[in-house]
Length: 278
Image 1: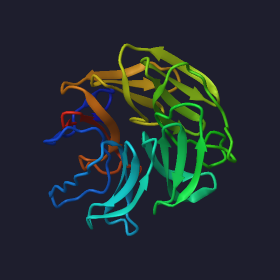
Image 2: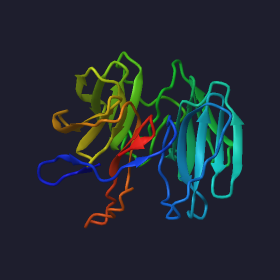
Image 3: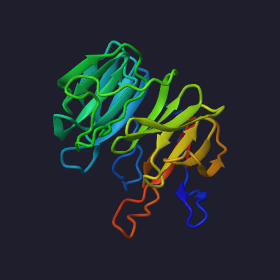
Image 4: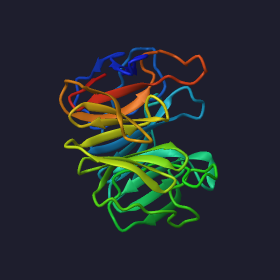
């Protein structure tokens, strides 16, 4: 979905449908062949992510299951690595952090443990926490130009909201939005809570959209709120039909291309559990 000009309204940019029930989705390089590749796995998939191959011509799919982590090269139909993870993989994030600032690493929330892996599956780090890890995000929390999960192998800060966190998104340095299982969403900036609102819906995704001054709150019942990062004020909202949402992300699937400034112009992409998407 795109944001319309002037009245800040949402409008549909494209639609798609799969003949499968979807529990996870991610976007990568655009394949103009129009061919569908299906890979069957005998374990229950909980999470997935995408990284570019070394030559950036195709993507590698990172898959988290209830007891393993694996990387699969769909283009060449081969497994790059497979790791047994007893606690299962709840969330996967790929990016650069702290001392690994010059390379992308795979960071996973596995039960009560954060694991870090190289792209070939080798261990980088792990740390045990005292609670279940539902979601992960990389954010420069202290303005040093580096993303942090931990700072110098220790906690940098802790924010107690009382309920399990289901969604989180870094908006800009030291600023992030959060969504709780109780229907609460809010934003922290520079270590202080800027706002917090309670809703009756269950959050699926939070996204910095259409710019860093707004956060898109995407709910399980296919409701969308675009809120001000600084105040929480709703700038526009919409309600889609299609059933229960699985996930939402930002990607230019409509081929709109870059803005006049040269920046990317992604669309808010919604994926329903029944295989439909907008």
